Image (tube, rainbow over all chains, first blue to last red; front, side, top):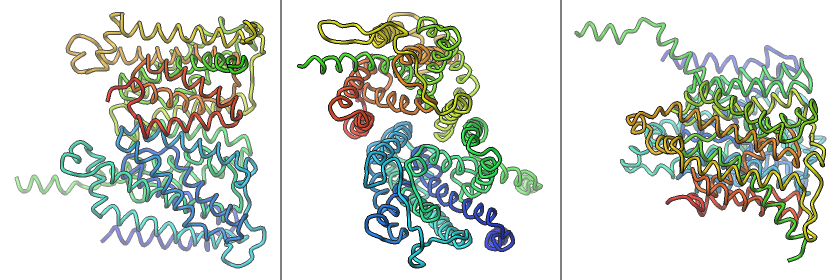
Length: 327
Length: 287
């Protein structure tokens, strides 16, 4: 009961945030936190729940972003209308990577994700219809409201919030459904799960395809907000890094972990970019590299888990006392 | 076969030999402790910058750069093993992969921060000019790199299969608990493997720098090439890595020559996906 009160309180704060902080910088920052939280939550489904570490998730992000910009450029579609196209392409690519590798040890999967992302970047850089090295742009002036081209970040903020709630709702449903139980069993001990008849490869693949489809939505949203996509921002390895570090720092395999990670890292990056300018990009990723190493070495379950464990430890442990009373 | 095609073929073999050299370290570590070093390509990148600095500061060529890079990288490898890998290898998959992936980012963007994004290269005739053998032109730098790389890869294979240290390492790879009961210290053997593998990337980097572009992000490309080589050659197999490396060097050079330079990486990466689909155990791997 207490938990739901807390959650409602946080949700209320998130809803009123852009009304309290009305400067364009802070509203845009809020929208970006939510956008990366969507992508990181989508990553969490395969990386956290299924325990398969994708280091090339940007390929799905790029599918969504490029689908929306390409269909706008060539057919005049409103960018958001290409969401199904981006999702279909992402699910297809996920199958291409996942079918052969999810049967093998997890290392093959990670290596394949990095190679396919790089392959996609190289191909797109050489395809004229996808803007090659220059990239593609969205509508300069909104034709209708469906172009989702706004000057203020406020509409984006609420749009991203709505999508994030859908992604989190889906994750929560998955966590408590048959597939969630299977994934937990596989992650705990794949051999044992298999021996009990769980088709490990299949459920990992489902998780990967769901994750891929949702990540592509984040890509489409990114492209509608920025109105522009190029191979570096849409398919570069650094976007993969951002997606996975937010989920891993917050807590991979926890529903709200990616949200915590995004809320910490997005402001940090925006501020460091503002202070240091172009040179900041290199330094930001040095710091990200160090953070990733520290998470892996000391806190593989992330900050949120650490916090929850601390809170549980701080309470006078009732279970212990009860045990003694009974004894 | 036309002369120029033969020339491309030989150039590809020489490049492939260097691929085989640094990939053999990756396959050694993977076979021994089931850990993939995602920073492997960036180790090579660091060695390339060492070669660049050796030339810039002392005017030295690869013979001066190789021992320096090998020692530096071997040290880095051993430090990485004791401070990071040893701890994450027993953890969850997330920790295993993110550990070395984070190290890769740290090295890559550390170099980016220090040297900038610009591409560097060593002077073309640092090693010597170009030989003309019956109409086939071969760069001396490629010839040196290729020959040395083949010799060293074979030496690594012989060391593993013919010496007592090699037997101890293979014993740890087979079953580290059983090896420990026989009086072998798995920790020490694994540290030696990391030092050896990283040292080889040092030599490979110093060699490849004599005819390859040098940039902070070259490590990503080289890492993927190492993944392709190791998967194609078969998990843990040094001879497999040698054959696969030569093959990939040739395929890359031929596709660059026949289809166009921008497509050569696309061809190599596509081969990787094909290997995973159709022969994940690799050419030399056991089923």
